[in-house]
Length: 400
Image (cartoon, rainbow, N blue to C red; front, side, top):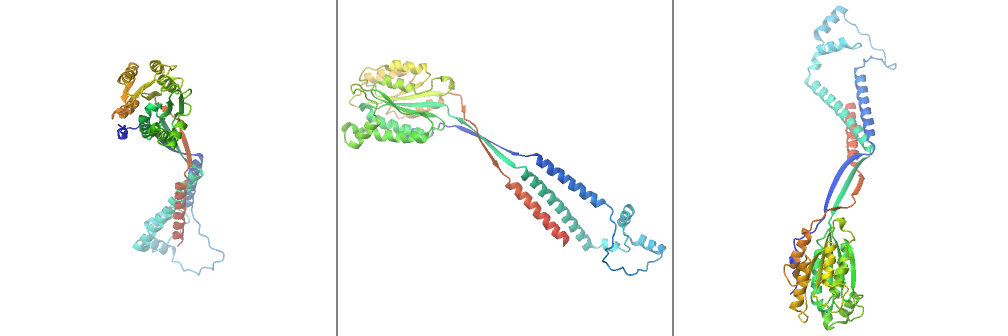
C-alpha cells in the first residue's frame, strides 16, 4: 500500500513577514528655507500693494492738450455728487489718488464687475500656483526618501529524515521520499536534512532551508531508490542505486544498523539546544538488524532524548522479511522513549507526523531586517511643474 500524498494537503509551516514603510527627507531644512522664501515673497507683495503710487508722465509722451477745468467750487460739488463713496474713502486715505468724476456708473456696470472678479480670481490663482511651485521645488531639493523595513520571522523547526536504504526497505523508501518531497513545498524557514544509512551513514544534505537544493536531492533519491533494483531489472537502475548509496557499506557483511543510523541523524542538529529550535527526526526502517552496531536502537533513542529531539518512527518491511516480533520491538522502543510510532502504510501517518511538528512550541527567530531606501521625488516634481504651468497661464491671462 502506498502512502497517500493527499494527506499532506492543507498543512503549511510558514514564516511571517512584516513590512514597515516610512517617508522622510534627506535635507529637511531646505523645506524651512522654502517656507521662509515664501513668507518673504508674500510680505513683499503686501508691501508693494500698499505702497502709494505716484503718477509719472513718460518723457516721450506728447504734451497733454489743455483742459478747461471748472472753477474749484463747481468741480468739488460735482465730484462730491457723483464720485463713488469707496473711491472717495480710498482717496482720503491714500495721498496721490486721482479723483475721477462721474465714475459711479462704471462701478455699477455688471460687465465691469464680472471682469473685476475674474481679474482678482486670476491674481489669487497665480499666487496660489507660485506658492505650490515653490513648496514643491523645496521638497524636491530636500530629497524625499521612502524607507521600507522588512522583518521576517523564520520558522524554528529542524527536521531530519533518517532513511534506512537496505534492500529490505526499498519497497517503501521511494514512497517515504515522495511524501517528504511534497512536504518541502510547504516549508518556509524550516531547516531540513536527509541522512541515509545501511551499514554506515551518509548525509545527503545537512540542515538547510535552501529548498531548491533539497528538491533536487530528493528527486535524485527518488530515482535511485527504485524497487526494481531488487530483481536487477535494469542496469541503469542498479547503477543509480549504487551511486546514491555509495559510502553506506563498508564490509558488506552487515546491514540495517538502525541504532548507528539514528545516532548519526541526532548529530546533524546544532550542539546547543539554547537556540530554541524544535527538533524532529522521522526515522523510517524495517528494524531488520543484520550486524553488531555501536549504538543499539534504545541507546540511540536515549541520545535523542538527551538532546531534546522528538522521534517519529515509521515501520515498513517487505513481505519476505516482515516479522511481528521485530515490529513489536521497534514500536516498544520508540514509544518508551517518548516518540510516536506509525506504519508506513498507515493513511493517517503523514498527516499526524506533520501535525506534531507544527504543534512543537519554539521561540520565533527574527532574521536580519531587510532595509530598502529609494528616492521618490516624482510626485513633488509633478506638483512643482503643475504650479509653474498654472502660474504661467495666470500671468498670460492677466497680461491679456
